[in-house]
Amino acid sequence: MTKKFGPVVAGKFYPSGRDDLIDKIEDCYTHKFGPGQFPDGSEEELSSPVGLISPHAGYPYSGPVAAHAFRWLAEAGRPTVVVIIGTNHSGVGSSASLVAEGRWITPLGEVKFEAGLAREILKSSEHLEEDSASFSREHSIEVQLPFLQHIWGSEFSIVPICLKSQSKEVAGDVGAALEKNLPEGALIISSTDFTHYEPQEVAEEKDERAIKSIMDLEVEKFYRAVRKHEISICGYGSIGVLLNFALKKDLSPTKLKYATSGEVAGYGREVVGYGAIGFRK
Image (cartoon, rainbow, N blue to C red; front, side):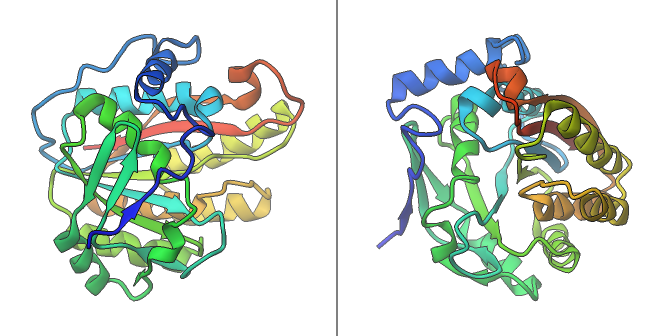
């Protein structure tokens, strides 16, 4: 029997009804902090791999920033497979987890897993383990799916990866495994938010340091910045994976949008930072 995951946060992070969810996604595109236009999804497959950093909070807060990432992706082309690297927020399961077989359910339909590719990635990694427990309560992978489904329906497959360990060693190992096995038209999504629950000025200052090192493709510099300045990026390990992959594949980053929950929602003394960054040749 095919194992099914989700929806974990339907009705919490985004609407649980299909029509309401589509309306909410479209609101994210037209929001004053969104890109201002709907995506025009290209049916032409990507000719080379691309990467995205995209936030994973509730859509009323991070959705407009995520919309910048997915509009950029829609213009780049249709991915042949999507690797989504989430952060283990529950603490359940292995330090670095992957599921090879299954489907993820959202109000917009079911997305299948790319089992063969997932198993090859597992074989190439010293740290990844096949472990479904890590995904049982995890939202950071799920919230990316409706944006993809809004553009291309459910006619794509995913490899979900969940990191409890954010270490540089794990990031390097997983990045190398992806570089070895992913097809040319693959998409990697680093699902992460940036600084958590700091005043607006502090969040901006900290996140500017982190984003500068990302734009410079400096893995060591990025990890040093996170440690030295105590930047509470929940998925910095997934960013590390993407940076390692980008360096191996000669991808260049483009900063698409940065905003905080305070700016998007219009209130809050302590804010969360959200960034959208695209990587391509």
